[in-house]
Length: 215
Length: 318
Ligand code: HEM
Image (cartoon, rainbow over all chains, first blue to last red; front, side, top):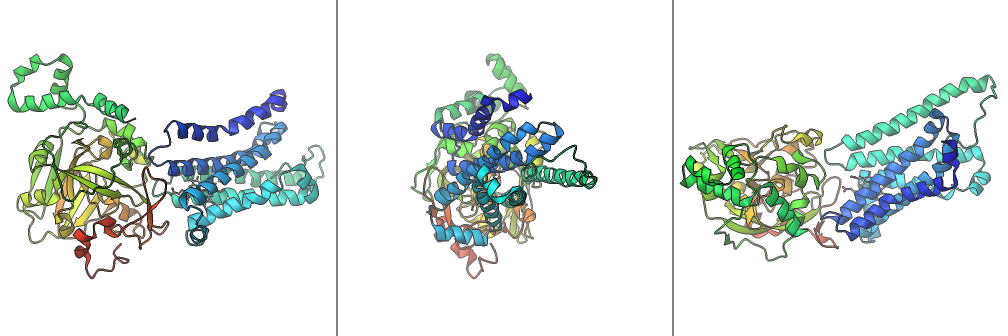
């Protein structure tokens, strides 16, 4: 398993897999498969995948610990950047195909419609994270402040779920399922923090915290 | 795509079989069944068998109420549906609604009327000459379609049962059967679906009792076998698969209003100046078009219906 995880091709394979939702959209576009309202379909698909990739990103740390597979860290940045990538597509679909670059309208929407406001917040918070995702930026900021900054993804995840919850007409089951997942992932972190504290107090060096592992 | 979807309908309901059955029921005794193919006999014998969707309707006349705008394709109108009893995604009803049994079908007409009665779908189909009404149909979600519905003015049915002086509103109830509609439990709204109109709205000639579209009986996902179509109101007012029509003195509760009264009013007239709290209603996307178009007051039917609302604050009574 470890070998597989650090294998050269694994990362490339996962990278390609992350592109499948986009490929599926393009394929459907060519194959008349985007329903009678393609723009709505694309908005929803890209929104769904933005949220999913945020969740994948948040899953990495717990899975590393629970499965004792620290190698998983190799994929965290990739997932985060894909969340940003699909977020960009989602936002572009909205600006281009929904508002036709009428930026005044866009601003009005952001200011006036709570579901757009929180969606925008969720998206904007991802921008600095994407920019500072490189090793150079980690060095420049230092591990601690970098970690602190990257906790913004928690807010992004919560805001993304609220965005979804507020936009559905009645069928809240799916947004609630996403919400439950986010809550579980955040609670796990809280619990992990309390669990690791006594260790730290005892000054137990047996399990050093790997750098940048806890965003 | 078009051909394919028609084939699908035909697959579910052999048109000829249904027509044969009706002719047969009318004209012949049971003995004649023996002369039919075994499969068709089975369909005749089992009352549980399927829908009447996709049967050609004959003798349909044109209507002056029709728009000349380009119609949406049959494929669009049958594969992009809000019919929450059959799933919340718009592509789901096309798949899930095929299990709906729409024959035999009876609608109960009751309440403040001199002649309450049960009326069968066969009677409804013959009650008045069928007209094709090509209407704009505007969804509250800011998309729209143009559909060649078939039916006749609801007032025909109303006059048949003679509403009393007490009748001020009409309440509509859609069919609901959890076994046939297992997806309904995830919809987040209460069923059966209920809707309503003020009596004068219901009696307006535009208000259509609809039994078909595109020259045929209604496909299940579009509200077979009989539904309402109220073209100047948001689509959710036009209840599908009707089983009960009740004339009454009080304003009836309506499904979406019950769920979120600040978002969905009883009137729900199409109005570009009254936004849904969460999105604008100023523009709409006509399916099949790239750019959005301006939404028209009363969906462009002001001439026929604006007088129903003179002196009413449309921002208050949204
Ligand atoms: C990280 C940021 C965001 C996430 C995670 C996200 C997620 C989602 C999700 C899950 C959906 C629903 C998809 C479905 O129904 O299947 C959605 C829909 C939508 N989002 Fe976002 N979104 C984000 C940012 C934004 C932004 C910045 C905007 C615009 C300013 C926006 C505008 C919309 C619109 C217009 C819809 C469709 C609403 C409708 O059809 O009623 N989103 N988004």
